[in-house]
Amino acid sequence: MAHPSYEIIGWVAFAIFTAASVFFSIIFTKLYEDHYETEILVTLTTIISLTLCVCTVTIVPVDVYLVSSTSNWISGTKFEWATPALINHMLFGVKTAYYVVFAIIAVLCFIVLPFVYFYYEEWDEEEGTVMKRSMAALKYTTLTIAILLALLMTGLLLKARTTDERTDMDWFRRLLTSSGAEKSLSFVIAALILFGMLIYISYTAYGLSALPFYFLKGTQSAESQRGDIESRLVEIRERTRAINGRYTSTNRTITKRDKKMLEDLARQERSLTRRSRVVEVESHTWWYKMGTMLRPFQILIGLAMLCVTWLIVVSLFLGSIDKVANSICGSDCGFILNNPQIYNPLSQIFLITERYFPIDYIVFILIVAYFFISTLYGIMRLGVRLLWVHLYQIKLGETPPQGLLLTTVILILSVLPLTYYTSVVAPQYATFGSQVYCTSSTGTCEATPDLIHPCSIDAPASLCTPTVLSNLLGQITFGNRFFGMVFYLFQWAFILIFLIGFAVSAIRSPPPPGTPTRAEEEEDDLVSPTDNERRPLLTGNGARVGSGIGGGNL
Image (tube, rainbow, N blue to C red; front, side):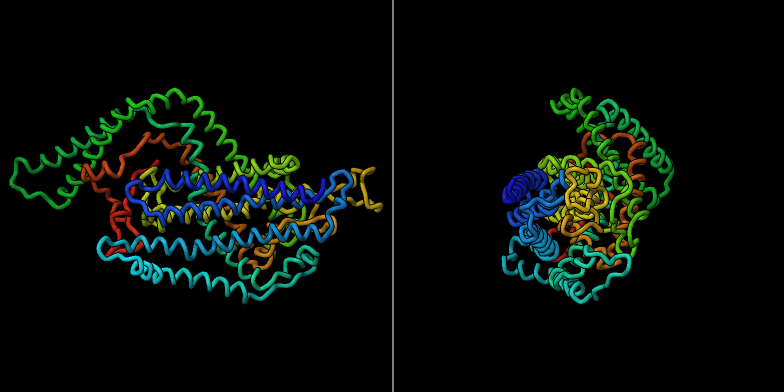
């Protein structure tokens, strides 16, 4: 097969999945945005941002496919058409795609999304002209622009490191030949991946551990909820009568403590009464009845998710062990592996399916989608937070524009670490794909297939072409020891938090099937004790303070 066919197939597959990601981004945005509080600028920004973040990881299988297509598995040599010039041409296109997408994501995260967020915060029906809102938003965005410029300058001014006896190989030497622009952008990419890992060990780790149990345990039945609500109402009314009984036969003035307690109990009673009405209505809907009928399928989905979850976590664990045990240079180069020594199930799946492209592409996209859904589930359960401050709640059809923008930032940052974790759970796949090389003195191994070996870092550069992704990650982890060490430590933090979340989710009772909407809360005039924490990042004249209060959890 001629070389152009491989390249066309790879990029056509990428174009198809990009079109699918656009469709997905539109559906996601329309499903979650508040239907009564929308702005076209927020909607378009969310769609474009989500599309680009998905494109970042969909380049990876194309990258692997193109380098793998140059290797002849029968002879252990390069195909005749795979000349150095043609290989460099292919990789230049992939490299350009990576850098363009990463650069646009950096601009979105540091400039566009903050600007749109603050632009919407400055909304004012009477005095909010476009120019006034734009200038106010730009004033606040200068901080994030300054951070981006600082990261670019830091990457440019960092002193280049040199190789030693452990890393004196062509692969490592090539990592140190990047231009100043590449160094700057690589540093920004590393910073974004680092921020993304904070999302990864919180929202993604929790979502990955809890999502299978959401399907396995299901939700409480209407009868169970009614029983719980009635018992809680009886308890609340008994406590209310006990407090009132202290003052009915005396002339004592009620204390501030008891008065506050009565107010809290009254609020809880109103909330439970409303919840009882909602349960009664939901128990007669077709959706509730269909959910009962489809319960066996829900359990099967949960079991499948549980298997995929443990496949990912076990692969990450084995990859982390392999890195620390068999790295050629340890923490000094970010635990880069020369040749994986420990069997990794997910890596093996990718290596097998890679030979039947685009099957590996589909498997990769499914895993990315699972991570994405798990992160979204974590956001819906935990809400959008700034440390301990609860800013927004994410809910179908009720997410305010500011909450949607912040959720987009979280999802973008959560996807970026997947590029790094791919090299952990599938190191051979992410670095060389299915490339092999021949160690025979004759130059070909058609007659001696036992002399054909998988490509590794110390293999001849003329026979083994590393992926652009492995070079990019190598520049980050080998060029800067800090990122290599921190990335590795975050792998273990992710596993630890996942195990804690898994244990908690396993013993926790199933949640109720739904929660009151924001409109129902306003109708009943209920104020949650945490509502004062659910606020935008800005307050002041023209700021939409009230729009930060979201609905309930999933």
